[in-house]
Image 1 (tube, rainbow, N blue to C red):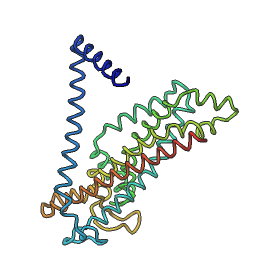
Image 2: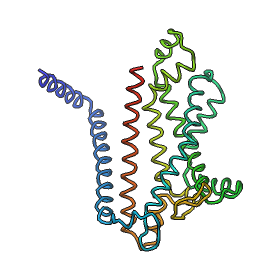
Image 3: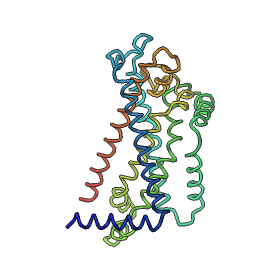
Image 4: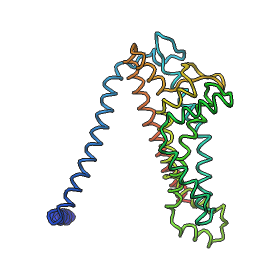
Length: 293
């Protein structure tokens, strides 16, 4: 029965495509774009794995970097520290700003309109501009030097618009009936926002955090000008650091350790995939807990 229905629906779709050639063209272009995207992704991942996996040696995971082992472990730890610090700065600011814009600000508020336009504008600024700003403001004007905190503050400003806009869209997508039902049961505004609205918007919020994390992990230009290129573990927030992406750039730029640069790219790829898996798992669990409550 189900097979017959499926065959009938396919036949109807074919008749629709033949009656409207424009629909057929759009359909074919959509599938072509999807296949092209998947093909490029598979090619890039396969190329990186083929070129990098054979050179993943124990020397690359030693705690101390030198010109012989070109270890990536300090850069890996620095990347995790940079990402965590930047998200601790940008995450609360972006999420709470979005909560105010959606839940508390009045409709037609001019400040909210200015913030939205500013966030969209900042999202399109190249990272090299953020790097120059960070170098002039944090490194030079505030005398923070080339350091972990300078890099974290710079990339935090860079990803703040992404977190803010995605959180705002996630909150807007929560049905108004959820809020009305909570108010009808006697819950206040604050309880409604944190116990009803936010759990429902968690997947959308985490998608913004994932995008921000990916940009931080893959950032090179801004961090060269603000965090530096020292391949050592930071002693404090004012120590110069080198992230994985900067490490890979430096190795490929020197031309003597291209194979190790590909091996670094493999670890960077695995890191991004693991972060995405953990974020998706966390989002599903938080959503399930919110539904149970």
